Length: 638
Image (cartoon, rainbow, N blue to C red; front, top):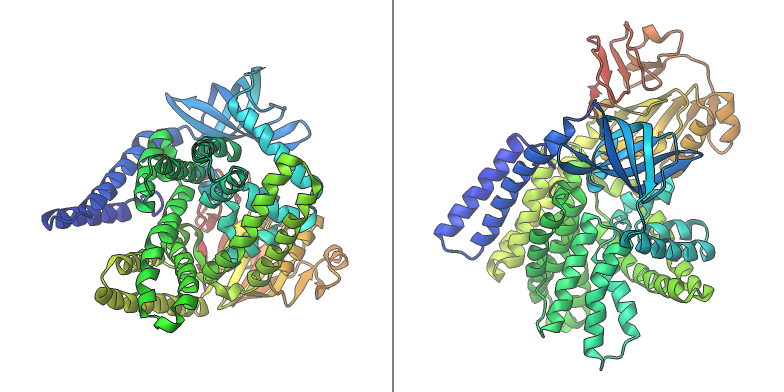
Protein backbone atom coordinates (compact mmCIF):
# COMPACT_ATOMS: atom_id res chain seq x y z
CA UNK A 1 0.00 0.00 0.00
CA UNK A 2 2.87 2.35 0.64
CA UNK A 3 4.24 1.73 -2.87
CA UNK A 4 0.96 2.57 -4.54
CA UNK A 5 -0.32 5.33 -2.29
CA UNK A 6 -2.60 3.39 0.05
CA UNK A 7 -6.25 4.43 0.18
CA UNK A 8 -8.24 3.01 -2.74
CA UNK A 9 -5.21 1.08 -4.03
CA UNK A 10 -4.68 -0.58 -0.67
CA UNK A 11 -8.36 -1.47 -0.40
CA UNK A 12 -8.28 -3.02 -3.87
CA UNK A 13 -5.22 -5.10 -2.99
CA UNK A 14 -6.86 -6.27 0.22
CA UNK A 15 -10.12 -7.15 -1.57
CA UNK A 16 -8.29 -9.01 -4.36
CA UNK A 17 -6.17 -11.03 -1.91
CA UNK A 18 -9.21 -11.85 0.25
CA UNK A 19 -11.26 -12.92 -2.78
CA UNK A 20 -8.39 -15.07 -4.09
CA UNK A 21 -7.98 -16.73 -0.68
CA UNK A 22 -11.72 -17.52 -0.37
CA UNK A 23 -11.97 -18.82 -3.95
CA UNK A 24 -8.88 -21.03 -3.72
CA UNK A 25 -9.88 -22.32 -0.28
CA UNK A 26 -13.30 -23.34 -1.59
CA UNK A 27 -11.63 -25.07 -4.53
CA UNK A 28 -9.16 -26.69 -2.08
CA UNK A 29 -6.16 -25.54 -4.07
CA UNK A 30 -2.66 -25.62 -2.60
CA UNK A 31 -2.13 -22.08 -3.85
CA UNK A 32 -4.62 -20.90 -1.20
CA UNK A 33 -1.59 -20.68 1.10
CA UNK A 34 0.00 -18.16 -1.27
CA UNK A 35 -3.19 -16.06 -1.23
CA UNK A 36 -3.27 -16.31 2.57
CA UNK A 37 0.32 -15.09 2.71
CA UNK A 38 -0.50 -12.15 0.44
CA UNK A 39 -3.51 -11.25 2.57
CA UNK A 40 -1.46 -11.45 5.76
CA UNK A 41 1.29 -9.32 4.20
CA UNK A 42 -1.19 -6.57 3.24
CA UNK A 43 -2.68 -6.52 6.73
CA UNK A 44 0.81 -6.46 8.27
CA UNK A 45 1.91 -3.63 5.97
CA UNK A 46 -1.17 -1.60 6.89
CA UNK A 47 -0.66 -2.18 10.62
CA UNK A 48 3.04 -1.35 10.39
CA UNK A 49 2.53 1.91 8.52
CA UNK A 50 -0.17 3.04 10.94
CA UNK A 51 1.42 1.88 14.20
CA UNK A 52 5.11 2.52 13.42
CA UNK A 53 5.71 4.80 10.44
CA UNK A 54 2.98 7.37 10.97
CA UNK A 55 3.88 8.11 14.64
CA UNK A 56 7.52 8.64 13.61
CA UNK A 57 6.51 10.98 10.79
CA UNK A 58 4.57 13.03 13.37
CA UNK A 59 7.93 14.16 14.77
CA UNK A 60 8.54 16.19 11.59
CA UNK A 61 8.80 19.90 12.44
CA UNK A 62 9.75 19.28 16.06
CA UNK A 63 12.91 20.08 18.02
CA UNK A 64 14.00 17.53 20.62
CA UNK A 65 16.89 16.40 22.78
CA UNK A 66 17.95 12.83 22.05
CA UNK A 67 20.81 10.39 22.17
CA UNK A 68 22.01 9.26 18.73
CA UNK A 69 24.41 6.58 17.54
CA UNK A 70 26.36 7.50 14.42
CA UNK A 71 26.13 4.64 11.93
CA UNK A 72 27.61 6.07 8.76
CA UNK A 73 29.11 9.31 7.45
CA UNK A 74 27.65 9.93 3.98
CA UNK A 75 29.41 13.21 3.17
CA UNK A 76 32.07 15.36 4.83
CA UNK A 77 33.12 18.90 3.94
CA UNK A 78 35.64 20.41 6.34
CA UNK A 79 34.20 20.14 9.83
CA UNK A 80 30.58 19.84 8.67
CA UNK A 81 29.16 16.49 7.62
CA UNK A 82 26.08 14.54 6.59
CA UNK A 83 25.46 11.35 8.55
CA UNK A 84 23.03 8.52 9.21
CA UNK A 85 22.26 7.97 12.90
CA UNK A 86 20.08 5.65 14.94
CA UNK A 87 17.72 7.23 17.45
CA UNK A 88 14.78 6.28 19.66
CA UNK A 89 11.59 8.26 18.99
CA UNK A 90 8.75 7.52 21.39
CA UNK A 91 9.96 3.98 22.01
CA UNK A 92 10.45 3.34 18.29
CA UNK A 93 13.97 2.88 16.94
CA UNK A 94 14.58 4.44 13.55
CA UNK A 95 17.36 6.02 11.51
CA UNK A 96 17.71 9.70 10.65
CA UNK A 97 19.60 11.54 7.93
CA UNK A 98 21.27 14.43 9.77
CA UNK A 99 23.51 17.38 8.99
CA UNK A 100 25.97 18.61 11.60
CA UNK A 101 28.24 21.64 11.73
CA UNK A 102 30.83 19.64 13.69
CA UNK A 103 32.52 16.30 13.07
CA UNK A 104 30.96 13.21 14.63
CA UNK A 105 32.95 10.10 13.58
CA UNK A 106 31.50 6.63 13.01
CA UNK A 107 30.69 4.51 16.07
CA UNK A 108 30.16 7.55 18.30
CA UNK A 109 27.25 8.05 20.69
CA UNK A 110 26.19 11.65 21.30
CA UNK A 111 23.58 13.62 23.23
CA UNK A 112 22.30 16.25 20.83
CA UNK A 113 19.55 18.74 20.06
CA UNK A 114 17.90 18.01 16.70
CA UNK A 115 15.54 20.02 14.50
CA UNK A 116 13.55 17.41 12.56
CA UNK A 117 11.74 17.66 9.24
CA UNK A 118 10.14 15.28 6.76
CA UNK A 119 12.33 13.40 4.29
CA UNK A 120 12.85 15.11 0.95
CA UNK A 121 10.39 13.75 -1.63
CA UNK A 122 13.16 13.45 -4.22
CA UNK A 123 15.02 10.96 -1.99
CA UNK A 124 12.04 9.33 -0.30
CA UNK A 125 12.54 5.88 -1.85
CA UNK A 126 16.23 5.91 -1.04
CA UNK A 127 15.46 7.09 2.48
CA UNK A 128 13.13 4.16 3.08
CA UNK A 129 15.74 1.71 1.80
CA UNK A 130 18.11 3.09 4.44
CA UNK A 131 15.40 2.89 7.10
CA UNK A 132 15.21 6.69 7.20
CA UNK A 133 11.84 8.40 7.63
CA UNK A 134 12.99 11.84 8.78
CA UNK A 135 15.88 14.20 8.16
CA UNK A 136 17.12 17.05 10.29
CA UNK A 137 19.91 19.22 11.60
CA UNK A 138 21.96 18.83 14.78
CA UNK A 139 21.92 22.30 16.35
CA UNK A 140 23.88 21.45 19.52
CA UNK A 141 26.13 18.60 20.67
CA UNK A 142 25.96 18.26 24.47
CA UNK A 143 28.32 15.29 24.76
CA UNK A 144 29.89 12.66 22.51
CA UNK A 145 32.00 9.59 23.16
CA UNK A 146 33.40 6.63 21.27
CA UNK A 147 31.10 3.62 21.68
CA UNK A 148 33.84 1.10 20.94
CA UNK A 149 34.52 -1.10 17.95
CA UNK A 150 31.73 -3.45 16.88
CA UNK A 151 31.68 -6.40 14.52
CA UNK A 152 30.16 -4.05 11.95
CA UNK A 153 33.12 -1.68 12.20
CA UNK A 154 35.54 -4.61 11.81
CA UNK A 155 33.88 -5.72 8.61
CA UNK A 156 33.66 -2.11 7.45
CA UNK A 157 37.45 -1.95 7.76
CA UNK A 158 37.72 -5.11 5.62
CA UNK A 159 35.29 -3.62 3.12
CA UNK A 160 37.26 -0.36 2.95
CA UNK A 161 40.51 -2.31 2.60
CA UNK A 162 39.15 -4.20 -0.42
CA UNK A 163 37.85 -0.98 -1.95
CA UNK A 164 41.19 0.70 -1.28
CA UNK A 165 43.00 -2.02 -3.26
CA UNK A 166 40.58 -1.49 -6.12
CA UNK A 167 41.03 2.30 -6.04
CA UNK A 168 44.84 1.96 -6.03
CA UNK A 169 44.97 -0.28 -9.09
CA UNK A 170 41.94 0.52 -11.27
CA UNK A 171 41.39 4.03 -12.62
CA UNK A 172 38.96 6.24 -14.50
CA UNK A 173 35.50 5.02 -15.46
CA UNK A 174 36.53 1.41 -14.84
CA UNK A 175 36.96 2.23 -11.14
CA UNK A 176 33.70 4.22 -11.16
CA UNK A 177 31.69 1.30 -12.53
CA UNK A 178 33.58 -1.25 -10.41
CA UNK A 179 32.72 0.66 -7.22
CA UNK A 180 29.04 0.69 -8.21
CA UNK A 181 28.73 -2.88 -9.48
CA UNK A 182 31.08 -4.75 -7.17
CA UNK A 183 30.54 -2.80 -3.94
CA UNK A 184 27.08 -1.28 -4.50
CA UNK A 185 28.58 2.20 -4.10
CA UNK A 186 26.72 4.18 -6.76
CA UNK A 187 27.42 7.55 -5.07
CA UNK A 188 30.65 7.77 -7.05
CA UNK A 189 28.90 7.44 -10.42
CA UNK A 190 28.87 10.54 -12.59
CA UNK A 191 25.46 11.85 -13.64
CA UNK A 192 25.86 10.66 -17.22
CA UNK A 193 26.97 7.13 -16.24
CA UNK A 194 24.15 6.80 -13.73
CA UNK A 195 21.71 7.76 -16.50
CA UNK A 196 23.31 5.30 -18.94
CA UNK A 197 22.80 2.54 -16.38
CA UNK A 198 19.10 3.38 -16.01
CA UNK A 199 18.37 3.66 -19.72
CA UNK A 200 20.27 0.47 -20.54
CA UNK A 201 18.44 -1.46 -17.80
CA UNK A 202 21.61 -2.28 -15.84
CA UNK A 203 20.96 -0.10 -12.76
CA UNK A 204 20.03 -3.15 -10.68
CA UNK A 205 23.66 -4.28 -10.79
CA UNK A 206 24.51 -1.38 -8.48
CA UNK A 207 22.40 -2.99 -5.72
CA UNK A 208 24.06 -5.91 -3.93
CA UNK A 209 22.07 -9.08 -4.62
CA UNK A 210 22.31 -12.85 -4.65
CA UNK A 211 24.63 -12.68 -7.66
CA UNK A 212 27.29 -10.97 -5.53
CA UNK A 213 26.98 -13.66 -2.87
CA UNK A 214 27.03 -16.54 -5.35
CA UNK A 215 30.10 -15.34 -7.27
CA UNK A 216 32.14 -14.43 -4.19
CA UNK A 217 31.25 -17.72 -2.52
CA UNK A 218 32.18 -19.63 -5.69
CA UNK A 219 35.55 -17.87 -5.71
CA UNK A 220 36.17 -18.99 -2.14
CA UNK A 221 35.02 -22.56 -2.77
CA UNK A 222 37.37 -22.93 -5.76
CA UNK A 223 40.22 -23.05 -3.24
CA UNK A 224 38.64 -26.02 -1.40
CA UNK A 225 38.81 -29.49 -3.04
CA UNK A 226 35.51 -31.17 -3.96
CA UNK A 227 36.42 -34.10 -1.70
CA UNK A 228 36.29 -31.83 1.38
CA UNK A 229 32.50 -31.64 1.32
CA UNK A 230 31.95 -30.70 4.96
CA UNK A 231 34.59 -27.99 4.77
CA UNK A 232 32.92 -26.52 1.69
CA UNK A 233 29.52 -26.54 3.39
CA UNK A 234 30.96 -24.92 6.53
CA UNK A 235 32.54 -22.15 4.46
CA UNK A 236 29.21 -21.64 2.67
CA UNK A 237 27.35 -21.38 5.96
CA UNK A 238 29.88 -18.87 7.31
CA UNK A 239 29.81 -16.82 4.12
CA UNK A 240 26.13 -15.81 4.46
CA UNK A 241 26.55 -13.74 7.68
CA UNK A 242 30.05 -12.60 6.65
CA UNK A 243 28.72 -11.32 3.33
CA UNK A 244 25.91 -9.56 5.18
CA UNK A 245 28.40 -7.70 7.35
CA UNK A 246 30.76 -7.01 4.44
CA UNK A 247 28.13 -5.43 2.18
CA UNK A 248 26.03 -3.87 4.93
CA UNK A 249 22.58 -4.75 6.21
CA UNK A 250 20.15 -3.62 3.55
CA UNK A 251 16.87 -5.39 2.68
CA UNK A 252 18.15 -6.82 -0.62
CA UNK A 253 21.36 -8.04 1.05
CA UNK A 254 19.31 -9.61 3.86
CA UNK A 255 17.20 -11.45 1.30
CA UNK A 256 20.27 -12.72 -0.55
CA UNK A 257 21.94 -13.77 2.71
CA UNK A 258 18.94 -15.73 3.99
CA UNK A 259 18.45 -17.53 0.67
CA UNK A 260 22.15 -18.37 0.45
CA UNK A 261 22.02 -19.71 4.02
CA UNK A 262 19.04 -21.91 3.11
CA UNK A 263 20.88 -23.20 0.04
CA UNK A 264 23.94 -24.09 2.13
CA UNK A 265 21.80 -25.77 4.79
CA UNK A 266 20.13 -27.82 2.06
CA UNK A 267 23.54 -29.15 0.98
CA UNK A 268 24.31 -30.09 4.58
CA UNK A 269 21.06 -32.08 4.82
CA UNK A 270 21.51 -33.64 1.35
CA UNK A 271 18.50 -31.71 0.08
CA UNK A 272 18.20 -29.55 -3.01
CA UNK A 273 17.00 -26.07 -2.08
CA UNK A 274 13.79 -25.10 -3.93
CA UNK A 275 13.96 -21.43 -5.09
CA UNK A 276 10.29 -20.71 -4.35
CA UNK A 277 10.43 -22.25 -0.87
CA UNK A 278 13.65 -20.41 -0.06
CA UNK A 279 12.19 -17.13 -1.32
CA UNK A 280 9.00 -17.57 0.73
CA UNK A 281 10.99 -18.38 3.87
CA UNK A 282 13.19 -15.32 3.30
CA UNK A 283 10.14 -13.09 2.82
CA UNK A 284 8.64 -14.46 6.03
CA UNK A 285 11.79 -14.23 8.17
CA UNK A 286 13.30 -10.93 7.04
CA UNK A 287 10.46 -8.61 8.14
CA UNK A 288 10.76 -10.14 11.60
CA UNK A 289 14.49 -9.30 11.69
CA UNK A 290 14.05 -5.92 10.00
CA UNK A 291 10.46 -4.62 9.97
CA UNK A 292 11.31 -1.63 7.76
CA UNK A 293 11.65 -4.03 4.82
CA UNK A 294 7.84 -4.13 4.68
CA UNK A 295 7.84 -0.68 3.09
CA UNK A 296 11.15 -0.90 1.25
CA UNK A 297 11.09 -0.68 -2.54
CA UNK A 298 14.54 -2.27 -2.85
CA UNK A 299 13.36 -5.34 -0.97
CA UNK A 300 10.28 -5.63 -3.19
CA UNK A 301 12.42 -5.29 -6.32
CA UNK A 302 14.84 -7.91 -5.00
CA UNK A 303 12.09 -10.41 -4.13
CA UNK A 304 10.18 -9.94 -7.39
CA UNK A 305 13.39 -10.10 -9.41
CA UNK A 306 14.40 -13.41 -7.81
CA UNK A 307 10.87 -14.74 -8.37
CA UNK A 308 11.11 -13.80 -12.02
CA UNK A 309 14.60 -15.14 -12.73
CA UNK A 310 14.53 -18.16 -10.41
CA UNK A 311 10.89 -19.32 -10.33
CA UNK A 312 8.67 -18.00 -13.13
CA UNK A 313 11.47 -17.74 -15.72
CA UNK A 314 12.68 -21.38 -15.61
CA UNK A 315 9.09 -22.73 -15.60
CA UNK A 316 8.09 -20.45 -18.49
CA UNK A 317 11.16 -21.26 -20.59
CA UNK A 318 10.79 -25.00 -19.98
CA UNK A 319 7.32 -24.93 -21.56
CA UNK A 320 8.40 -22.58 -24.35
CA UNK A 321 11.27 -24.87 -25.30
CA UNK A 322 8.70 -27.63 -25.99
CA UNK A 323 7.74 -25.69 -29.12
CA UNK A 324 11.33 -25.57 -30.45
CA UNK A 325 12.03 -28.16 -33.19
CA UNK A 326 14.07 -31.10 -31.90
CA UNK A 327 16.94 -30.43 -34.31
CA UNK A 328 17.42 -26.91 -32.94
CA UNK A 329 16.79 -27.59 -29.24
CA UNK A 330 20.40 -28.17 -28.30
CA UNK A 331 21.35 -24.75 -29.64
CA UNK A 332 18.25 -22.64 -29.04
CA UNK A 333 17.09 -23.98 -25.66
CA UNK A 334 19.96 -22.54 -23.56
CA UNK A 335 19.67 -19.16 -25.31
CA UNK A 336 15.89 -19.13 -24.94
CA UNK A 337 16.09 -20.06 -21.26
CA UNK A 338 18.62 -17.34 -20.49
CA UNK A 339 16.63 -14.65 -22.33
CA UNK A 340 13.27 -15.68 -20.86
CA UNK A 341 14.58 -15.79 -17.28
CA UNK A 342 16.12 -12.35 -17.68
CA UNK A 343 12.94 -10.98 -19.29
CA UNK A 344 10.76 -12.43 -16.52
CA UNK A 345 12.88 -10.66 -13.92
CA UNK A 346 12.31 -7.35 -15.73
CA UNK A 347 8.55 -7.95 -16.09
CA UNK A 348 8.07 -9.05 -12.47
CA UNK A 349 9.81 -5.93 -11.15
CA UNK A 350 8.06 -3.64 -13.65
CA UNK A 351 5.09 -2.79 -11.35
CA UNK A 352 7.49 -1.26 -8.80
CA UNK A 353 9.43 0.50 -11.56
CA UNK A 354 6.19 1.92 -12.95
CA UNK A 355 4.89 3.07 -9.57
CA UNK A 356 8.12 4.66 -8.31
CA UNK A 357 10.40 5.37 -11.26
CA UNK A 358 7.79 6.00 -14.02
CA UNK A 359 9.76 4.05 -16.61
CA UNK A 360 11.24 0.65 -17.45
CA UNK A 361 14.03 -0.22 -19.88
CA UNK A 362 13.11 -2.43 -22.83
CA UNK A 363 16.80 -3.34 -23.04
CA UNK A 364 16.96 -4.72 -19.50
CA UNK A 365 16.71 -8.42 -20.35
CA UNK A 366 19.46 -8.33 -22.99
CA UNK A 367 21.73 -5.99 -21.01
CA UNK A 368 21.55 -8.14 -17.87
CA UNK A 369 22.40 -11.24 -19.85
CA UNK A 370 25.38 -9.68 -21.64
CA UNK A 371 26.85 -8.06 -18.53
CA UNK A 372 26.44 -11.05 -16.18
CA UNK A 373 29.66 -12.94 -17.14
CA UNK A 374 31.72 -9.73 -17.20
CA UNK A 375 30.59 -8.72 -13.71
CA UNK A 376 31.06 -12.26 -12.41
CA UNK A 377 34.66 -12.26 -13.67
CA UNK A 378 35.34 -8.82 -12.20
CA UNK A 379 33.91 -9.84 -8.81
CA UNK A 380 36.04 -12.99 -8.69
CA UNK A 381 39.26 -11.09 -9.43
CA UNK A 382 38.24 -8.31 -7.02
CA UNK A 383 38.16 -10.90 -4.23
CA UNK A 384 41.59 -12.22 -5.25
CA UNK A 385 42.97 -8.67 -5.43
CA UNK A 386 41.69 -7.87 -1.93
CA UNK A 387 43.04 -11.08 -0.38
CA UNK A 388 46.43 -11.29 -2.12
CA UNK A 389 47.02 -7.56 -2.71
CA UNK A 390 48.64 -8.55 -6.01
CA UNK A 391 48.16 -5.72 -8.58
CA UNK A 392 48.16 -8.30 -11.39
CA UNK A 393 44.56 -9.22 -10.52
CA UNK A 394 43.49 -5.64 -11.24
CA UNK A 395 44.13 -6.13 -14.97
CA UNK A 396 41.15 -8.46 -15.67
CA UNK A 397 38.97 -6.23 -13.47
CA UNK A 398 39.92 -3.26 -15.62
CA UNK A 399 39.27 -5.16 -18.87
CA UNK A 400 35.90 -6.44 -17.63
CA UNK A 401 34.80 -2.98 -16.55
CA UNK A 402 36.03 -1.33 -19.76
CA UNK A 403 33.94 -3.73 -21.84
CA UNK A 404 30.98 -3.29 -19.47
CA UNK A 405 31.33 0.49 -19.77
CA UNK A 406 31.31 0.28 -23.56
CA UNK A 407 28.14 -1.86 -23.55
CA UNK A 408 26.35 0.33 -21.00
CA UNK A 409 27.28 3.57 -22.75
CA UNK A 410 26.28 2.24 -26.19
CA UNK A 411 22.89 0.98 -25.01
CA UNK A 412 22.41 3.90 -22.61
CA UNK A 413 22.30 6.34 -25.51
CA UNK A 414 19.21 4.58 -26.92
CA UNK A 415 16.80 6.67 -24.85
CA UNK A 416 13.84 5.70 -27.02
CA UNK A 417 14.19 2.18 -25.57
CA UNK A 418 13.24 3.47 -22.12
CA UNK A 419 9.48 2.90 -21.92
CA UNK A 420 7.68 5.87 -20.34
CA UNK A 421 5.13 4.77 -17.74
CA UNK A 422 4.29 8.25 -16.51
CA UNK A 423 0.51 7.90 -16.73
CA UNK A 424 -2.26 6.90 -14.33
CA UNK A 425 -2.75 3.17 -13.95
CA UNK A 426 0.56 2.17 -15.57
CA UNK A 427 1.54 0.05 -12.56
CA UNK A 428 -1.83 -1.75 -12.72
CA UNK A 429 -1.12 -2.75 -16.32
CA UNK A 430 2.34 -3.99 -15.34
CA UNK A 431 0.84 -6.00 -12.45
CA UNK A 432 -1.60 -7.65 -14.87
CA UNK A 433 1.25 -8.44 -17.29
CA UNK A 434 3.37 -9.94 -14.50
CA UNK A 435 0.42 -12.05 -13.30
CA UNK A 436 -0.24 -13.27 -16.84
CA UNK A 437 3.40 -14.30 -17.23
CA UNK A 438 3.17 -16.14 -13.89
CA UNK A 439 0.01 -17.97 -14.99
CA UNK A 440 1.86 -18.98 -18.18
CA UNK A 441 4.73 -20.38 -16.16
CA UNK A 442 2.56 -22.65 -14.03
CA UNK A 443 -0.15 -23.58 -16.56
CA UNK A 444 -0.27 -26.72 -18.68
CA UNK A 445 0.84 -26.54 -22.32
CA UNK A 446 -2.66 -25.81 -23.63
CA UNK A 447 -3.25 -22.90 -21.26
CA UNK A 448 0.37 -21.84 -21.70
CA UNK A 449 -0.26 -21.08 -25.36
CA UNK A 450 -3.39 -19.08 -24.51
CA UNK A 451 -1.82 -17.05 -21.71
CA UNK A 452 1.31 -16.57 -23.81
CA UNK A 453 -0.72 -14.92 -26.58
CA UNK A 454 -2.52 -12.76 -24.01
CA UNK A 455 0.81 -11.71 -22.46
CA UNK A 456 2.28 -10.84 -25.87
CA UNK A 457 -0.82 -8.82 -26.74
CA UNK A 458 -0.72 -7.01 -23.39
CA UNK A 459 2.97 -6.14 -23.80
CA UNK A 460 2.35 -4.78 -27.32
CA UNK A 461 -0.67 -2.80 -26.07
CA UNK A 462 1.29 -1.25 -23.19
CA UNK A 463 4.11 -0.18 -25.54
CA UNK A 464 1.58 1.25 -28.03
CA UNK A 465 -0.32 3.09 -25.27
CA UNK A 466 2.90 4.56 -23.88
CA UNK A 467 3.96 5.74 -27.36
CA UNK A 468 0.60 7.43 -27.99
CA UNK A 469 0.68 9.20 -24.60
CA UNK A 470 4.28 10.35 -25.14
CA UNK A 471 3.62 11.68 -28.64
CA UNK A 472 0.62 13.65 -27.35
CA UNK A 473 2.36 14.96 -24.21
CA UNK A 474 2.23 18.77 -24.13
CA UNK A 475 2.92 20.04 -20.62
CA UNK A 476 5.39 21.83 -18.39
CA UNK A 477 7.09 20.03 -15.49
CA UNK A 478 9.42 21.47 -12.89
CA UNK A 479 12.56 20.38 -11.04
CA UNK A 480 14.82 22.21 -8.64
CA UNK A 481 16.80 22.40 -5.44
CA UNK A 482 17.56 24.99 -2.78
CA UNK A 483 19.43 27.29 -5.16
CA UNK A 484 18.09 26.83 -8.66
CA UNK A 485 15.21 25.36 -10.67
CA UNK A 486 14.12 24.49 -14.20
CA UNK A 487 10.96 24.25 -16.30
CA UNK A 488 10.79 21.42 -18.85
CA UNK A 489 8.31 22.03 -21.69
CA UNK A 490 7.33 18.71 -23.31
CA UNK A 491 6.32 18.55 -26.98
CA UNK A 492 6.04 14.85 -27.80
CA UNK A 493 9.46 13.22 -27.80
CA UNK A 494 11.32 16.53 -27.56
CA UNK A 495 11.46 19.20 -24.88
CA UNK A 496 12.60 22.75 -24.28
CA UNK A 497 14.28 23.63 -20.97
CA UNK A 498 14.47 26.95 -19.10
CA UNK A 499 16.83 27.17 -16.10
CA UNK A 500 16.28 29.82 -13.43
CA UNK A 501 19.33 30.66 -11.33
CA UNK A 502 22.81 29.14 -11.61
CA UNK A 503 21.71 25.64 -12.68
CA UNK A 504 24.22 23.70 -10.57
CA UNK A 505 23.08 20.14 -9.79
CA UNK A 506 20.07 20.04 -12.13
CA UNK A 507 21.37 17.70 -14.84
CA UNK A 508 20.27 14.49 -13.11
CA UNK A 509 16.78 15.79 -12.30
CA UNK A 510 16.20 17.18 -15.79
CA UNK A 511 17.34 13.96 -17.44
CA UNK A 512 15.20 11.87 -15.06
CA UNK A 513 12.04 13.85 -15.76
CA UNK A 514 12.67 13.70 -19.52
CA UNK A 515 13.19 9.93 -19.30
CA UNK A 516 9.97 9.55 -17.31
CA UNK A 517 8.12 11.65 -19.88
CA UNK A 518 9.60 9.84 -22.89
CA UNK A 519 11.49 12.83 -24.37
CA UNK A 520 14.73 11.93 -26.13
CA UNK A 521 16.15 15.35 -27.10
CA UNK A 522 16.25 19.01 -26.04
CA UNK A 523 15.44 21.41 -28.86
CA UNK A 524 16.40 24.54 -26.92
CA UNK A 525 17.95 25.11 -23.49
CA UNK A 526 17.99 28.59 -21.98
CA UNK A 527 20.06 29.41 -18.88
CA UNK A 528 20.54 33.21 -18.79
CA UNK A 529 22.04 33.21 -15.28
CA UNK A 530 24.15 30.04 -15.50
CA UNK A 531 27.22 29.97 -13.25
CA UNK A 532 30.25 27.69 -13.46
CA UNK A 533 28.44 24.74 -11.84
CA UNK A 534 25.43 25.31 -14.08
CA UNK A 535 27.61 25.29 -17.17
CA UNK A 536 29.04 21.93 -16.12
CA UNK A 537 25.47 20.67 -15.55
CA UNK A 538 24.59 21.72 -19.13
CA UNK A 539 27.66 19.85 -20.36
CA UNK A 540 26.54 16.74 -18.45
CA UNK A 541 23.09 17.02 -20.05
CA UNK A 542 24.69 17.25 -23.49
CA UNK A 543 26.56 14.00 -22.79
CA UNK A 544 23.28 12.29 -21.82
CA UNK A 545 21.06 13.40 -24.69
CA UNK A 546 21.15 15.65 -27.78
CA UNK A 547 20.72 19.44 -27.36
CA UNK A 548 20.08 21.44 -30.53
CA UNK A 549 20.66 24.91 -29.12
CA UNK A 550 21.88 26.49 -25.87
CA UNK A 551 21.04 30.11 -25.03
CA UNK A 552 23.08 31.36 -22.09
CA UNK A 553 25.51 34.01 -20.91
CA UNK A 554 29.10 34.57 -22.01
CA UNK A 555 30.44 32.45 -19.11
CA UNK A 556 28.62 29.35 -20.33
CA UNK A 557 29.51 30.11 -23.95
CA UNK A 558 33.20 30.17 -23.02
CA UNK A 559 32.99 26.92 -21.04
CA UNK A 560 30.93 25.05 -23.65
CA UNK A 561 32.77 25.63 -26.95
CA UNK A 562 31.47 22.38 -28.53
CA UNK A 563 27.82 23.40 -28.06
CA UNK A 564 25.85 25.84 -30.17
CA UNK A 565 25.79 28.38 -27.33
CA UNK A 566 24.21 31.76 -28.02
CA UNK A 567 24.81 34.51 -25.42
CA UNK A 568 21.48 36.08 -24.39
CA UNK A 569 20.16 38.61 -21.94
CA UNK A 570 17.09 38.33 -19.72
CA UNK A 571 14.35 38.26 -22.40
CA UNK A 572 11.37 35.96 -21.96
CA UNK A 573 11.74 32.30 -22.84
CA UNK A 574 8.94 31.08 -25.09
CA UNK A 575 8.06 27.44 -25.80
CA UNK A 576 4.88 25.46 -26.32
CA UNK A 577 2.77 28.59 -26.47
CA UNK A 578 3.77 29.85 -22.99
CA UNK A 579 6.35 32.34 -21.79
CA UNK A 580 8.62 31.57 -18.83
CA UNK A 581 10.86 33.88 -16.87
CA UNK A 582 13.04 33.86 -13.77
CA UNK A 583 11.87 35.69 -10.67
CA UNK A 584 15.08 37.74 -10.81
CA UNK A 585 14.37 39.07 -14.30
CA UNK A 586 13.06 42.63 -14.67
CA UNK A 587 10.20 41.56 -16.94
CA UNK A 588 9.15 38.60 -14.79
CA UNK A 589 5.63 39.94 -14.31
CA UNK A 590 4.96 39.66 -18.06
CA UNK A 591 5.55 35.89 -18.15
CA UNK A 592 2.89 33.18 -18.05
CA UNK A 593 5.08 31.12 -15.71
CA UNK A 594 7.38 32.68 -13.13
CA UNK A 595 10.14 30.37 -11.90
CA UNK A 596 11.99 31.20 -8.70
CA UNK A 597 15.67 30.38 -8.59
CA UNK A 598 15.34 28.14 -5.56
CA UNK A 599 14.10 27.93 -1.98
CA UNK A 600 12.16 31.07 -0.97
CA UNK A 601 11.90 31.87 2.73
CA UNK A 602 9.19 34.39 2.05
CA UNK A 603 6.49 34.15 -0.59
CA UNK A 604 5.53 37.39 -2.34
CA UNK A 605 2.67 38.22 -4.70
CA UNK A 606 3.13 37.70 -8.44
CA UNK A 607 1.06 38.78 -11.44
CA UNK A 608 2.17 35.73 -13.46
CA UNK A 609 -0.48 33.10 -14.13
CA UNK A 610 1.64 30.42 -12.40
CA UNK A 611 4.50 31.03 -9.94
CA UNK A 612 6.69 28.07 -8.94
CA UNK A 613 9.29 27.77 -6.19
CA UNK A 614 10.99 24.98 -4.22
CA UNK A 615 11.00 24.55 -0.45
CA UNK A 616 10.86 21.67 2.03
CA UNK A 617 8.49 23.74 4.16
CA UNK A 618 4.84 24.33 3.33
CA UNK A 619 3.99 28.01 3.50
CA UNK A 620 0.57 29.62 3.12
CA UNK A 621 0.67 30.30 -0.62
CA UNK A 622 -1.18 32.81 -2.79
CA UNK A 623 -3.61 31.27 -5.27
CA UNK A 624 -1.23 31.25 -8.23
CA UNK A 625 1.79 29.91 -6.29
CA UNK A 626 2.93 26.28 -6.22
CA UNK A 627 5.64 24.57 -4.18
CA UNK A 628 6.99 22.00 -6.65
CA UNK A 629 9.22 20.37 -4.05
CA UNK A 630 6.25 19.40 -1.89
CA UNK A 631 3.98 18.63 -4.86
CA UNK A 632 6.48 16.78 -7.03
CA UNK A 633 3.86 15.84 -9.63
CA UNK A 634 2.74 19.42 -10.20
CA UNK A 635 2.60 20.22 -13.92
CA UNK A 636 1.00 22.72 -16.28
CA UNK A 637 -0.96 21.31 -19.21
CA UNK A 638 -0.57 23.09 -22.55
